[in-house]
Length: 443
Ligand code: ADP
Image (cartoon, rainbow, N blue to C red; front, side, top):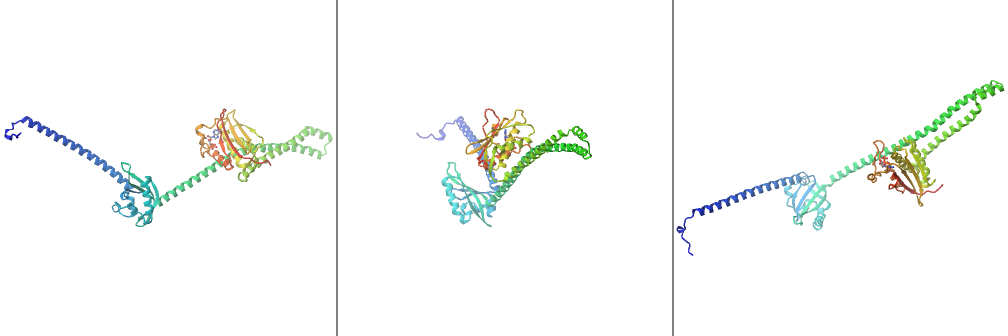
């Protein structure tokens, strides 16, 4: 169909208006889209810029060396510390092979590490020296794979810390470790002093009895000797027989002769008790560092318990059960200390209960011997069971417990080839600690 000439097209003003409106609104929409797009672009740019600044600040301030490479091992990013270490501007390092930063002789090892990271997709640690203006600078280097969004290895991240700095850190660590050991040794000494204090309280209390006994008897002896002196003076002065008989009755000399013997006997017993106490103490200190030998575990337990009880604030009943005599092999003084610790803990747990009872049982177990200390106190709470053998674990008031008694005792028993354990609570409750030792021979 032939096209009508423009002159022949009838004029339709309403149609051209509508077209114009459509065009204008399309332009409006496009413009709005453009503005929106521009805004989004700007905000994304701002985010990118913030991210870049953030990364830049990390790269600028990290004291460790940080290098990011692409898959070909060419440097993409690095920390400012690398420029400081190598003495070369960052721009001159960018884009070059990462291996070029290190001394020649370490390159094969570095290459091998890079291959391993790419192949096994896991970090690898090596030591390598950076080539710097002032000679090689040893780094403890970690190489880690960097992945792209599809999980493929996109390059590497190398982080390195100067070995010198690491050595300084290790030295500082070693120093604080030594300080801690010294503090621990001091605390062990404190615990020893605390046990010594408890022992001395017992010694003082125990010596007090026989000494006052000796003292009272000596006083009585003095009184008797005065009476005999009077009598002998009268004999010397030539008194008549009747007078002497009367004086003898008056001074009750017959009774006093018997009293005199009792007083001498009492003083001797007191002195012997003092001698025994001193002997116990001497043995405790001598056996503490002495050689291992056979000894009677039950006898040692009795001595240990008596020392604790002498220092106890309120009386506690202690019952010895099992065999009368059980021979063990070890350092008697050390084992006495262990038993003293266990009995002391039992006495502390009973805390003056009127029905408090400590049962100490020694048993011959065939190849070995054992001793258990049981108390009918509150027992060890379940949540503390795992911690009681830890050094410094204590539930006692400040100044009362150091928390070292059980850990030292555990170690002493271990040194004897035995084991100190808290037994599971029985139906009667309370706490039972038990340890075993090699069997000794009767002398
Ligand atoms: P310390 O007696 O100085 O606290 P120990 O190492 O001897 O140190 O004991 C550690 C903790 O174990 C005590 O504080 C206490 O909580 C607990 N314990 C030890 N023996 C008993 C016991 N017979 N009954 C209850 N708890 C105990």
